Length: 177
Image 1 (cartoon, rainbow, N blue to C red):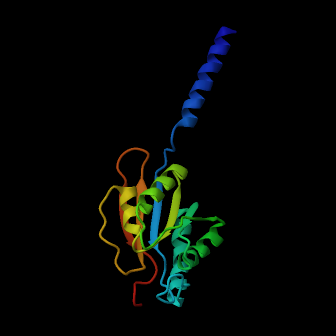
Image 2: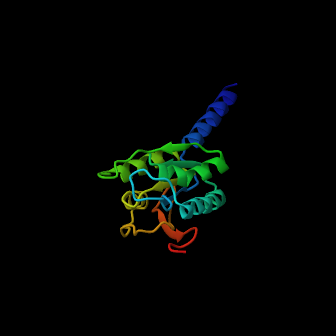
Image 3: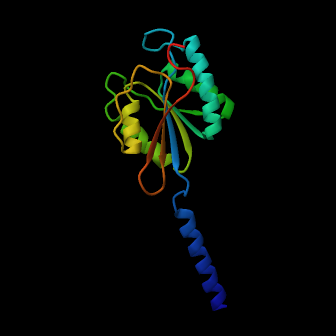
């Protein structure tokens, strides 16, 4: 009987160790700027080109297996990500930002994503002045200031151990097309 109890305790200990271990999968964070906006106002919807880009983002997110979505409070961001949320059946987590003074927004959002979505794939729709800090916080790599471009796609692959990798790609039509 002592051997049985000892064996059971050993099995429970191993199970507890395995369950407490962080995911062996990398955390993948895809970061894009909101799609083209209809006007140069604070809370404008998307233009026709922006709506097309939002549909292109659906295909990218679907292929990547996105299972969490973050957006700021602005309409153009929600309009960019809502087709993805609808297609994948995922609620959008709103991460409000003060665009005039974003402060440590990128670092705070990076911490939240890494804590709440370890080992998963996350899509973030940001702004020209928030993306750089978010990408740098997640990847540990310096990034050039974000140009007035909407097709940039930053992909940060953060393994459970070791340095993160940063991939810069494009999606949808190039600007001006």
